[in-house]
Length: 512
RNA sequence: CGGCCGUUAGCUCAGCUGGUAGAGCAGUUGGCUUUUAACCAAUUUGUCGAAGGUUCAAAUCCUUCACGGCCGACCA
Image 1 (tube, chains in turn purple, yellow):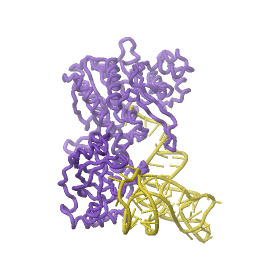
Image 2 (cartoon, protein in one colour):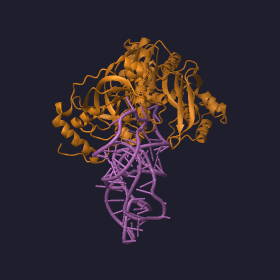
Image 3 (cartoon, protein in one colour):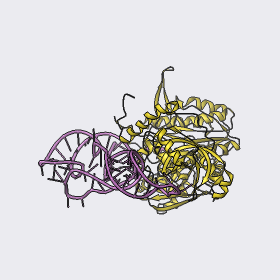
Image 4 (cartoon, chains in turn green, red):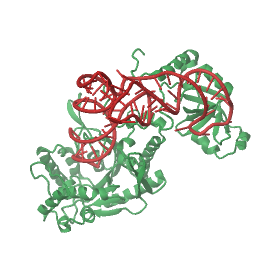
């Protein structure tokens, strides 16, 4: 209490003054915890919203609701709870009594109200305040009722205010929750088992990315926040858990953007005795089911807005239709028909020409030595010319082995792996493949990664000896996949930035 | 890490080529009392992001810094 917050102002001071009086005059130091909330606003609206005034008078039903005061309209208070809104009505004597006991209620105060439900002349339901109590005095004024909170920095830094004020924000995170539980249900119904594997790892593996480093005092060792759970999940398949999944956070020490947060949520799942084609089918089924169950429609609508916030373009992503499946080479040829298809089709044989194409389309080669092979160039060309064109749900297959250190080589073509990535709206949402279960091949690929690491690539993988040991015990033929939950939620909720789908996105702390 | 833009009352925003700070909402007081962004009358609110500079005079021009946004880079 001694150190006053520095953003105090007159409005807050006034409310503190009211609270001071409430503490003295009301029980529980002004913070009662004995109001029995029995009903939710939305349930009442759903049950009685259609009834006429007269029908309601007939019923004389009593409801006990609680929530935050969002507006004051004469004798009416608009209360907002977790489910929605309902009005409370205070007749004149009640208004006087409230003023005498708590002072004037402020927008933002949390109250409990019990009484008979009526319908107003204008057709809105309200609970007549017979029993009522101020449950929590709100000391800080809420943003303006009409425009709400639009300052993006404040939306992210003070998400609680954003959630109080903006229904769109509440909807977004409800959809996020439904997507996660939808995936969970979908997989458990199909016999998958949910597991948790280490987030603190001694050898960060399963992806190529810069990890966060930390230190464990008791063990006296460096540790890393995981960049992926992949290698642990496959150890579990070795152990006989043939269908496993994990939904949790990965951490990557990289830049922030509208599509990147240093911690982000992935679902990874692994299925023994399946291949990457099975997973494409599963993915298609799962996303279609999610779209229908969560959004009520297999077609997802996205918008492009201009600086004024007006919708200038609408996009519709159809998860009801069969998803397109096309190889990386064919995708490049399809979306960049001006490039020499014969070269694209023969990256190894016509490597120098491929490099020339890469340069032409704007691929930036790494400094110095020739570390990239034909597979990497092909992939870079694909990302440059085709990726952003993949609008409708599309699987890209036939990823070169060179960019797929954990994927199984294709039986007919050693240049490629049995792998796919999944794109919607030009954004990558998922990555899956038949797992490399040849322990000796995996060991060789780890060695290659270590060589790249030694050559200065700090995102290359470590050699994980225990993982090789696990493979030597025998990983059954298995396929696995990861889906970026945040990006999936962005798509479903038409959110332009990842910060809009993460409750507390990372920001630089405000200076003192 | 680079480029561009932004930061004015609790919130949403005006404030022109420099002349000393405004509106709506909310708040306060009173009225009204079945309202729907409730209404009517009166009224209060500011380190103009921070620091420095130019000037008789800076919210406004210049420099630096902080934070944010968008776009790049890295990646999912």
